[in-house]
Image (cartoon, rainbow, N blue to C red):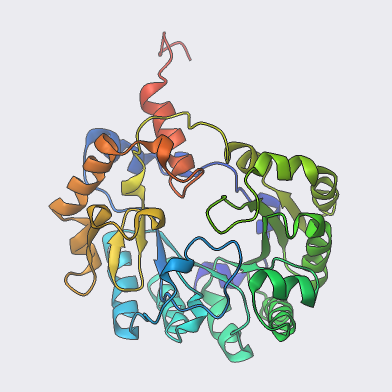
Length: 364
């Protein structure tokens, strides 16, 4: 059982979502500056590309299929990550992670070895047994809820409306079990801002508060060929009053967060010209590929290796890993990449550190 499980949560008052915590890992940053090897701080893991929902806004729908990472590989990966020095993992990815039964052992293994772990899920597949097993080993869980009613939820998640009842029941149970066991895991409901649910943001936030979670958050959905809107800024202006009303629900026990900075940056030009953040965050796909990022997951030039060929720690220490990071930094035009990607805030910090050095440096 990890430290998170020992005390009641105080995390909601300290949630930090718009920015990077990389400046809290200065020893690692110094190694990066010196060109020394270091383990990525964070990894995002996809246990499967199977999904029980087909959300209208999903940009990984192309990958939904039948791939399941086997439990042996999952457990070995988590142990190898800890051995390498990785500090945290988010179980999310191409599909719905709970579609792979191995997600329970994945989380338990993280707890056993002391690897910080989080879960993104639509909550439909969760059971009481699974919640009792996984919640003591998780730092946070984020539930995807895109509508406050059965009808709106079913239309956006593209599922039968009974999915709504299952998901809400399981989210409520997670909050109850957290309280029962006195756990420190932080529970949140996440909504993405799209045309179909912008007017519903306040109601989703109220629903989240009623379910007993610690916070509600709304962030941008990046336009792509399947979305029904073309401008995030126009959506923000259209639904600003609703978003502000949602944010006003915050109190001592609940946070309602509108990611205003993230919403603003979703259409802004990047402040940096090179992707330097890859060594700090890795993505692991359901077929075992260790990759730079999900948007480039189908391109071999962005692959570091495969867990079916090498242990994760060996991939991270390989020449291929270093060469791939260097190639991306020198050849990829970041202004053509998906806005506000996983490495975005890390890149902003590293660019500020390396390229924005002020004159008269020692006059602090």
